[in-house]
Image (cartoon, rainbow, N blue to C red; front, side, top):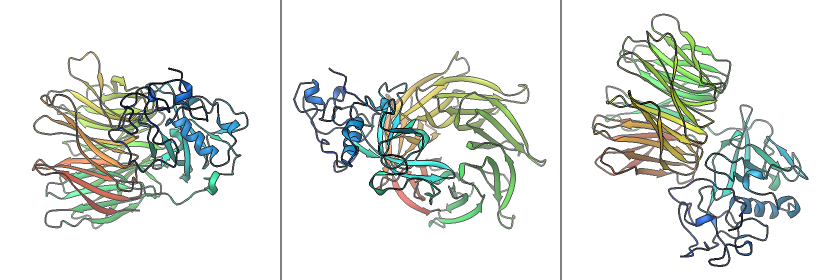
Length: 530
């Protein structure tokens, strides 16, 4: 087979609706291999070989007039650009998806996106070709560019898809074909600040009185609580506080005195607490400190001595703990792991050891731990999933095994695990769920089943589960936002009746809850935040 000038992505659990083709004229081109299908899911056409002649993988069969392989990302972007008047001399011959930014002849290669640009992903560990997509929309949130792109074959399936808002840094470069500040199709240039989607991040608790609480932080800097119970089944949402900077991370705890505590990180580098309770006479701003850098992630614990611990990390690789009880807060750097940390999860074991599990943009996952006798923080085992980690969650099971569950930019969900006697960490892929899983949460139920819940940039929320007797990993409950609104943040709880509950928010500010146990899953709206 000839090189087909590819830019491929990941394996999806489901294909987009057939009607969604982006207008691309070769959307139903047949696979050249028997049984010559025109549709499928996952990696259903060997070699990504869609073409005009059955059983013929020559360039005459599988290349379009633009010189790229049919139904691949490259051919779609080339068609999209040429259909809007961009000269074929600029579009054709640019190579695989990750090579489109290699030449600047006649074009501008930049990190500042505009509508009509080609968004380029360089090759990564599981994709030797890279990827290219078409920029459909641009906005600036707190000084950072975000883009929505349309694309083909991101799921290795030859299908069309469109993302929700993503940070422009998801892509290496943008190729501008018609000059800066002249977006194609009359779109926004992306300059200046625009009204941002709320894009809520969520965390949750079920308190001892059975009340369910979902806490959310938004790009407008607002913190909210949504709560309901058996006696008050209609969700109530109220604003806790505006912290003055876009919320980039959120966590929550309930203490023995009945107080609720929400911990947050911000774009401005602040980590803080708001709290309230039965006798607090309103919401109070508690401990705060500044990290000096954008807070990428936080986690929290309350130990048996009543001390509150907030863990945070940043792009410089610094991992911090802030703790307080009756005394003022103390902050110290536990470790620097040397990589851009995007997500952390924490656990305190019965011996008082504090564990932080982290994921990084270079694919690394690992552990930092310390206790009263450890003489500072220590780096534990590390592993690498092969591509950018977007989110992590963790569990320590009754046998003492550590589990880090991670989501990655290649669409994969991974487990990394080790025990007391392990000489290293073991990592394996649980499943591939498709486009950009943005958030994960986890639970281990009383029967030993491990559950990982995920949300994606395309508005899908789902579950994978497995146990000692399950014969592998199974896809459990799923939900897809009817509007395809993405950037979904998820949190999970298992209630005393054994029901699994997944709470999530989308970038439009809508909150949802999905619940199941002995009965099939039901999904309900919990309201919206702004």
